[in-house]
Length: 271
Image (tube, rainbow, N blue to C red; front, side):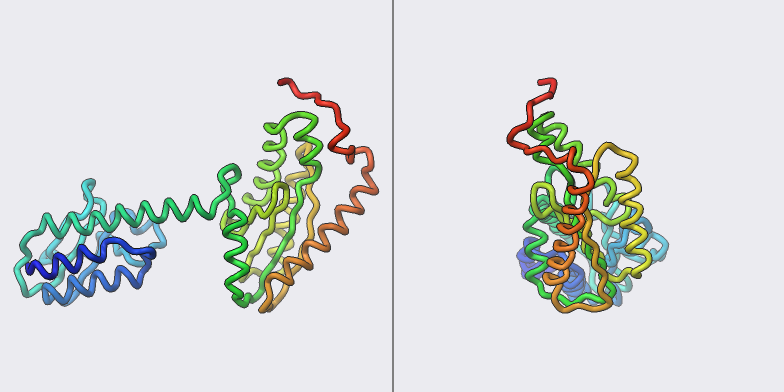
């Protein structure tokens, strides 16, 4: 193995995006260096993951050259029909192991960057970035959801009780949508953006969310919009927010006793 190859491979261990394109380039470098007919990554858990860059153990042949990458041997590099001798195997494995360690660190940091720490759904930063992408959507359902009475509950019973309200509303959503479809954009406001879904299924999921909340002591106001196609997701969210506000005003009129001035409530919490 040439020193130049090791240095070049090591120089590529740190990147901002460990995607399929990145790993294809890494594998291409290894394939060219060893003059192999095929180079694969094997993960013993690949049958339980959607990660396209991994194959499973069933792809192995008796004459394949296998290098364990990780200490627990769950990830392997496979060279098929390599014409050059594999030397410095431990160093190659170490470089590849560092790649996966760095990948895990980057993914953890990105998850923390885009995830609400309390509710484990997407945060405002992720929401703003999603809207800024200006992508067109087909068959997209959007729901603007407001947790009713957060200010009153916080002032009357304390923030732990307010967190309970938020977690209950979020559970009603995560039981029906992926966490990555749900954005907490304000203290008590959430936006659900679900592309590539039928209108009937989207409305069924929203209905299920409402049914669950009906079994609790908490409520939420919904504004729901469905578009077969849109090039301006921001406008769809605005439309959903207007519908939510109309629903909230109607609910307020029908349940005036639930709407105390949050600054005039008397604290009834236990601490």
